[in-house]
Length: 51
Image (cartoon, rainbow, N blue to C red; front, side, top):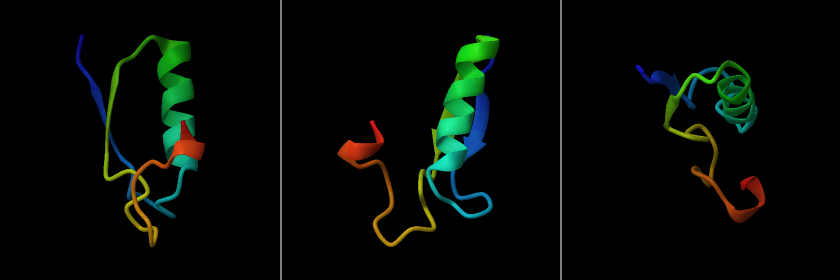
């Protein structure tokens, strides 16, 4: 199965695109590859509260 590539820097670049992508991945059983998570934020990447 092919992975759907998601660029986390798209749009606002916050965590909402990550949450939405993971939710849709679970519902559709489509694997995803997330990159540039929270890229447009001062402290980019995932923090403990995001997990």
